[in-house]
Image (cartoon, rainbow, N blue to C red; front, side, top):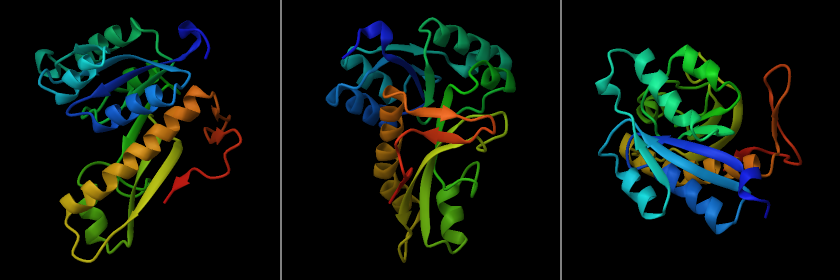
Length: 215
């Protein structure tokens, strides 16, 4: 293991219980990955994931969006808190805010999100019900770099689950959650191992990895 200063530095943003954040933290620590979770930040002071992180000795911050006059003011203060940790990557793990173009550009090629659909299918909200209503037989999640166009950035990895007869949006969401944890944690492992790169066409390359699909 290299010195802490040389580890892949990660800041995680959440809005609720942060189950993906928890899976990432556990993966980093249990596997002794070459990564450091520098801080967990939420836009909600009652986010359950904050207490979970605090109990594990991770620094936490609250930047409540409702206290700012507009999205730019909120994003600017959020960036100030993030930048204090000089992260290599900022991970959106259930962070329920649409970020301004200026914020996204500030962290270009360093801002990573997980979305509950097989992008480019079903960007935005209500993805589970949309997948059911469309007659799809498969649903999934996508970990991707964030760009200024919502849910359209370069894809890092995807996970797939079947849609079962009689599925509700809630049941499908719960079944997908374990796959989200698996896929996002695997992407963090690749980040820690410095395997990920973007070519000039913004296509993701992962060194020595044949497939980035998880079924």
